[in-house]
Amino acid sequence: MSPEKRYEDNIKLAYWVVSRHFPNLTWDEDIRQEACIGLWKAAKTFNDTLGVKFSTYADTCIRNSCLMELRRRKRANKMVVVSHDAPIPGNGGMFYSDTIVDLNDMIENSINNISIERCLTQTEKDVYLLKEIGYTHIEIAKNFGRSSSWVAEQLKKARSKLAKALLF
Image 1: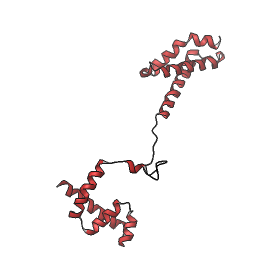
Image 2: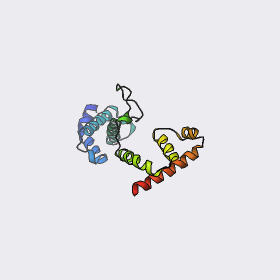
Image 3: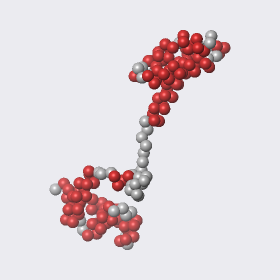
Image 4: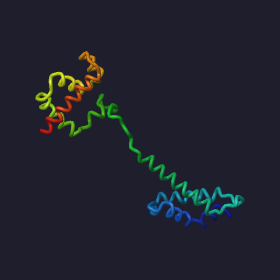
């Protein structure tokens, strides 16, 4: 039997395979098209001498063709992840993080400016503000002639006091 005849005689098989293996995609035109492509591949490559029914062989070919389409869709729908530290191309050295507005940060900054003055010691203020502008624990520790664990403890105290000040 010719591949064309085998294809024409089994076109309903392609739709049946879609409805059986992908019931929520039965009316998706792209999946149905992929099913027909899978059927065509099966009709072209089927070997009568292996003792396997055409429908069994075609079922696998059709299913694989549909799965490849679903994988293509999944790859096409992936989001592009950009680091917030990456520069925005052609924008004069501006970073993606410069464009992000965080409401919590805005509220925290406005409240912190008031709370920092009232509830923290001068050392806690200095350590906290150095950390806020981007210094590492080690850099802050060197600045004060202390260890990084001392910096962590100062930050912990400062954050605890600020949290209490925000609650009351």
